[in-house]
Image (cartoon, rainbow, N blue to C red; front, top):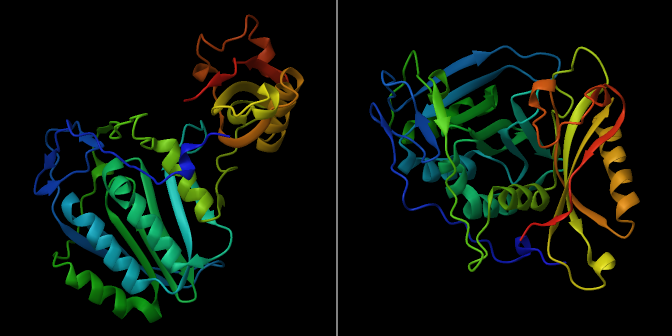
Length: 326
């Protein structure tokens, strides 16, 4: 199967984007503030958080920096604060109707060297994108470092790590602010930042996402968050396919889209796979790219059934054509 994700990664940022400046802070290229009155300042804020049944008491730090400083600051925090094995974490804005963010984490701890390799490869993208976040955490010692979606830094630690965190944050040379202002407090928009080139096999955001998830053994952690009021609900599903057996030759990457109504994520995927194999019995599902719940108003004309009553019943009500991706 042809799959450019196995090649050496090339992440190419668009060169024609103008960087926005808000107050004293240069923003990631992927973030565009719409509020003309918005003002940001470099700085940090800390607070004490009382623990619960799952976690002990901890301190949380939020840090705002110019984008030019973000990659190196995150690298320092990762290297100085994370232990030799970590759980990698990843977040992206969600298309799901019932949650804002899709969150992933490593099922098993990975070496910090492997984690840092992912940061070296894709950290510049995460620092510019504005829609995805990446970080690492440990339970013993209790510490987390995360580059947030809009380009701020989040650090949390147990009491035993508080002094170490404060020392590294102090090295960043930014003042403590009682009321730290973040990008997501203002009306803003996002824009694509990747330059896609077939000749260079440069990666798109899906390539980057799955390279990180698969190399660090990540699985969804909030897939069932935000339960709808009633079941079943409509789902949109996208598969990446291997059609080598069907075409009796090496096949380029293909995709297939389905809209189904089901009680759960598992049932929705099963229904879509059944419909796929009915039409393409030799197809293999290489990846489940997207699975998200929809509201009736999310159903566009390109997938809308003639009778909307179909959407209320379990089953597949839209099957798009299988098409080559690239």
